[in-house]
Image 1 (cartoon, helix red, strand yellow):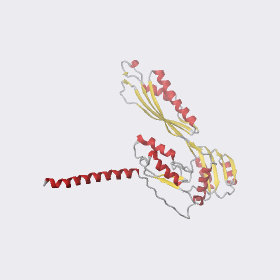
Image 2 (cartoon, helix red, strand yellow):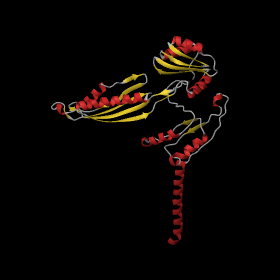
Image 3 (tube, rainbow, N blue to C red):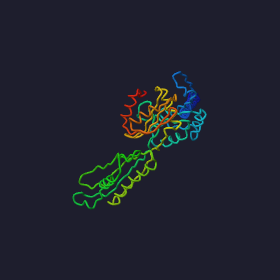
Image 4 (cartoon, helix red, strand yellow):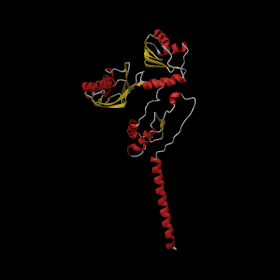
Length: 336
């Protein structure tokens, strides 16, 4: 009886291992398969400039690699010859350790135009420049001592941090540079000279040189204070992202302006700058003369500039509310 059952037992074992192998192969395929679909969208509501526009949408990559160094993914995108690439979610899956590799993937994707949908402005407004960021992380180490009986034996990390911060240029540095401290932390008893402070700050600027100079200034303040008081400094700089900027007459900006102006009734106005001082670019997709409007705007908003063939650029010395009021009074509104 026992000998008759052995072949069936071996068969069951083979089937179980076979099913397990198939399951493993399916999971591997599902995690590495590159699925592509093609769709042609036709609508009379689309602007004429969108005729023939090719868009590649990438979604649900989840840190996966498609071929060695993602060569299959790059090849598929290149073959599609996109004008625009949209990343619509789940590029990463929450593992910070691998995010650096994901950024490498983005740096190798190529399209004719780049548009970042990451600004809290009203619909129809175009951001043509943005600052880069450097984060500063530091630890200040002093020496503990009893604050009541032997305070002179201690080195206060809190005092070193306070002296450093008091010497820093912070908040608004100039029209394109800012700096801020987000963390200055030390928790301890009042009768102890505290020996450790954590510090975290950032600086942002559209100018790489100014951004680097401000970060170096803040580190120098920390180092000088520590040296003067006998504390020790450990720090690191993290270059979070780089700045970018396009002039108002750049072809990509003009193309966006034309699309916005046609959708929003004929006129597109782009203002970039800080409160009280803005550079502007105005455009009409139909090429109509806008010099009367520009002249009136310069008069009311204390501006200077001009142009021709439906395009003008310059600057104004006015608050945002005054700019919006001017256009509303002249019959223009915000496109939404």
